[in-house]
Image 1: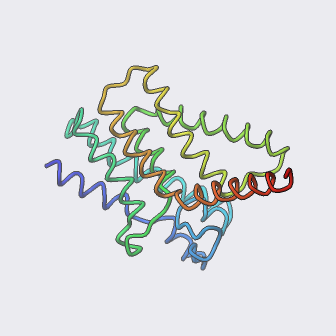
Image 2: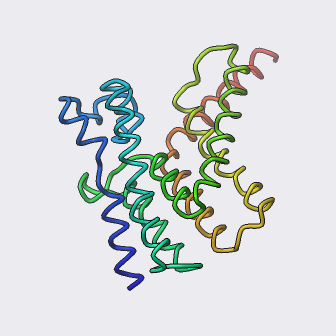
Image 3: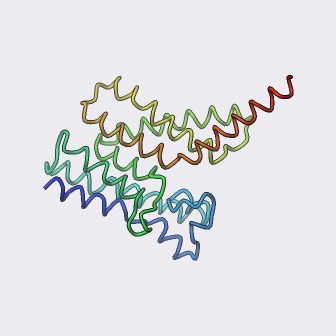
Length: 211
């Protein structure tokens, strides 16, 4: 039955609501921003109203099916791990978009809300808010770049392990966290590489000027 639940969660996660909402608004999300077919790019392309709806639907597809399975007792303990991760993987590797999906942020919040009754998802949101405020301060009030946003998402997820340890969550929760970290890092790999490349080039330019 676990394999069946994994399949169901993968299919639920692969439902690209934000991309489809974009098409209804005559906006192909692949042609906007970084081409991400997720909720936040929908917000950028079609406005905040559709953006909020996209965020809500992407969150719910991670939250609702998984919470039902847990509350009904169909899965528990370590059984939750593959089922929870499947929802995020479905969003990232959606068969509806030729196995190319979104970054997985909204669905990540949905999954963590279902698994920990909003506990960890709220902690992650607070961590991201703190990182964002620090980034704005360091950037002298200017908005952050897409690359910096991707970096903060990954660093925020990495930092989340400290909260898991502090709250003494069971070990299977760490398995979900690690898988989530790997997925989030993968989906932001291009942004992380560009950020590293820009920093590397700037460092060498500064060295060249000094010499």
